[in-house]
Image 1 (cartoon, helix red, strand yellow):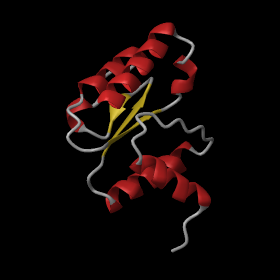
Image 2 (image 1 turned 135 degrees about the vertical axis):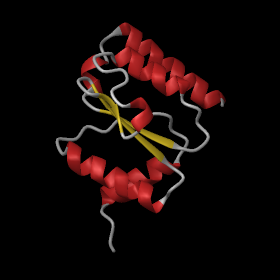
Image 3 (image 1 turned 135 degrees about the horizontal axis):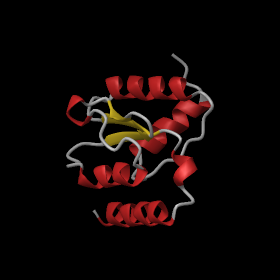
Length: 116
């Protein structure tokens, strides 16, 4: 099966050491489905999905956690025991990027990821 340019690039980014990959898409469902298929192929990955209204999804232990709280959503990421690669979808998170606490939390996360 031929992969599109996007699929090749996204696969490369997911396998890289980038701690954050920002993707803006009007096709949220299609992107999420692609990531689910990627995880099925490379089963070392875990998948979490967060949105402002429903909080975290995809894991029954964390269902609804951090609803209405984007900073708590980032705290959750820091607390994950990353024993295997994890993909975390933060839906509509671009709307919170002007918040100084969110900016600092993301910068700190990148520093920790780069060291570890």
